[in-house]
Image (spheres, rainbow, N blue to C red):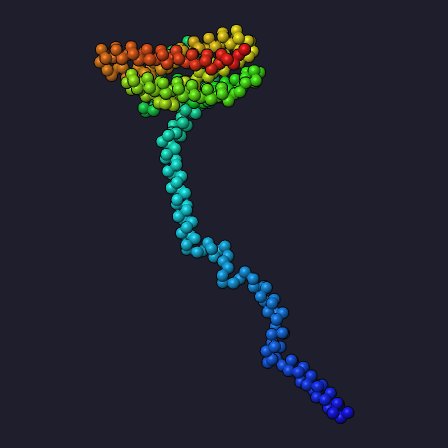
Length: 297
């Protein structure tokens, strides 16, 4: 019994001693257990703030990043400059602005001149310091606004006519564009073969060729409203007007260099250039009829 009591006292004393040791702040196991929760809290609260994680400001302040951004910006600006230069070489954007410098008064006068060119006397283009004035200041100046709008209006009326016949409009659009390109290329080739040095540009030829779409639109619209008889009468009037307009405008352009040549050379070349002018003017009514006769039933 004494032995049992002594053993129990020894165990109780040992347990008390172990509890005192657990309360000892110098015990490593106690330091780990008491600070584990706080350590976890500090650990979770410090996520993303280590030295291996960069914020957006640190990334922007990096010299290599700044150098890469500067190089990319310089490369982009250089590419844009090269693209603008090459685009202006094939499509002169600065010159196109001149051909669209029109207003309502000019458009009204030009449409009247295209349909009724018989009473107009002065066909020369006005210049200001060796530069032709903008179309809105001179009704004789070529423009692209009326040809573009005439082409669009012609396509709309052709679509209306083809819709009543259950036919495809895409073929009509592509045919009109292809024949326009063929006409301009044929005129350029003819001027080269005849050795005519003129101030006519390719855009001028496109503009003069595009004026025929006004007569084509009038003819097709009259055909839809007044059957084929109205189509033939209106198209005939527009074809004659286009022929007269082309003769009087192209004649001054093609014969512009004749005054600087000798009398014999001038006489021979003038006759050849006049034939060329008449051929160009006569071809446009043919295109007008070819692109519209099948639209009216």
